[in-house]
Length: 430
Image 1 (cartoon, rainbow, N blue to C red):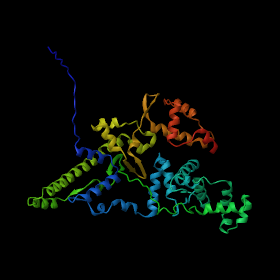
Image 2 (image 1 turned 30 degrees about the vertical axis):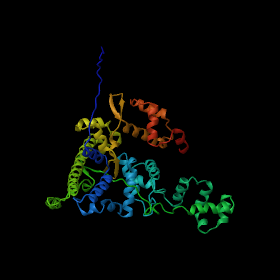
Image 3 (image 1 turned 180 degrees about the vertical axis):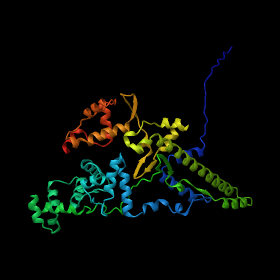
Image 4 (image 1 turned 90 degrees about the vertical axis):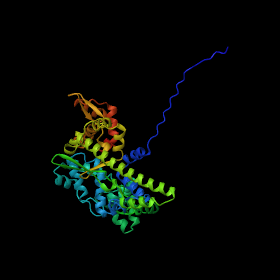
């Protein structure tokens, strides 16, 4: 007799198809304003039933921005690059005084002493800000004269040395082609002088020369922030970049003609275009509402940043926001990805307002990592005033005395993230 054996085997299959519309909605949500603008233009070109909100959008409204006058373009670009320097109102005033006093060639027409008087601040701080501004693009911007601008370019190419300095200090001999005099001053032969002059002649004589040929990578903000009576107001940078319009009149005409069309393939194509157009319209509207809702919640939590500066940024995570707006954490992550806000002359990533927390031992409260970075930065900025360099260990001790629980390793990590060299390298420049 044959014995039969029975056994149970688990066999679980999950057949879950993600709606293509949901996939498209996710893609659109995480696009930047520039990407959304380009995406909608392509969709309008492909779909006969879609229209741009206005002719300006159809012809590419970003081209209007890019074709602004050269000086306005450069100034706004410099304000964007300097956003992370302007961490408080004093720094903002100094940055504005320098940018607004650039000449048409990119040379700075005021000294740190002038800037300090204009902004009612110290000359040391004005000098510190100017040094940082000189690190921005293009090379040599904010130079006070031709010699300084040429020096910056030579340093960028790792060519600058004491011989080049002698030539730049004697540009009158270079202009008159007095090679023998330069050869004697530099203590090199004529051939080496010729090679050095050849290198100098490849440099740009003015910081803004040639920028028309170069592409200036300017950030287009997704959201414009304005403060009115201590209230934060948000609006999308370009409403039209988030919209498409269905040509209802044309759709009605086509639907009538559909009844007489024998070709099923044509009918299906037309129906798909209409359905896709409506879906795109809904997804863009949903993105609009989600972005404003999430940004509004983030910026209201970080409201003190706009009034007191970076040290007032609170600890904040994607999870905190997801709980407050009743959305999934991944939705928050996509909503803030590649998004920027513009406030006055600052352009900042929305992710800038998310920070980890560090315990303040005095009152058991949380301090944001951004606030700690700012304290570290302020300590290092003060070194010139006291003629002393703080090591990472010393900074750690100062913060610990202020009852901020932080390790030396974390201080070093934050310092490096601020692109500040270590104490040994800083001491050489003191």
